[in-house]
Amino acid sequence: MALVYKDSVNSKNSDNSDQYFMEQAFNLAQQAEKINEIPVGAVVVYQGRIIAEGFNQSILHNDPSAHAEMLAIRQAGKYLNNYRLLDCTLYVTLEPCPMCAGLLVHSRIKRLVYASPDLKTGAAGSAFNLVCNEQLNHQIVVTGGVLREQCSQLLSSFFKRRRAEKKNKKLKSKRFIN
Ligand SMILES: [Zn+2]
Image (cartoon, rainbow, N blue to C red; front, side, top):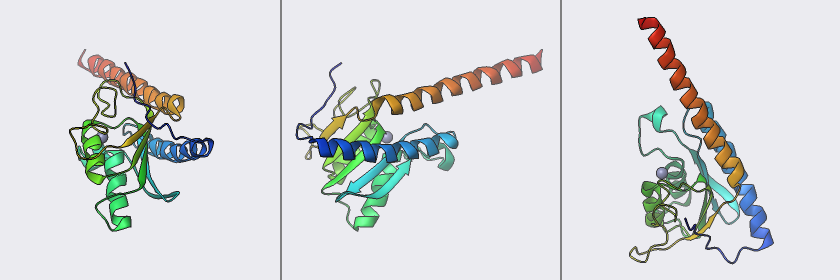
């Protein structure tokens, strides 16, 4: 499947800062993992500084909209005192879902950088493309694959562990019944 790597103006410098900011998003993803949420983290950067951050907290808050991107974007709006995040970049460890991709368009964010593609539901080019769609009134510059290995590894080991835990639980309850 063709992925979207649109940022052709990437200089060596912005490559380095992309790595740096994705590292920060990765640290947040690890915080999500600690509380058993799907390990996804996000930061919003404005004028070279992190102004907002978030990690998945849907289970914790019984809130299906509490995705890393959603929380970071809300915080960034408050910080800037503006509902438009003009000239901001969102770094996130997993390609945004359709809900978050829609939010990014509403926020008028300039650029999106993600680590792992989400081939099943990613809405920045993998399964859909909502962030750079002519039918919508705002298009976002997208860079994919920054720290991909590291962030994918965190996700896959999380799901592996969770599957093992579920299997264990099942086995235990079987034993109990017998
Ligand atoms: Zn989302």
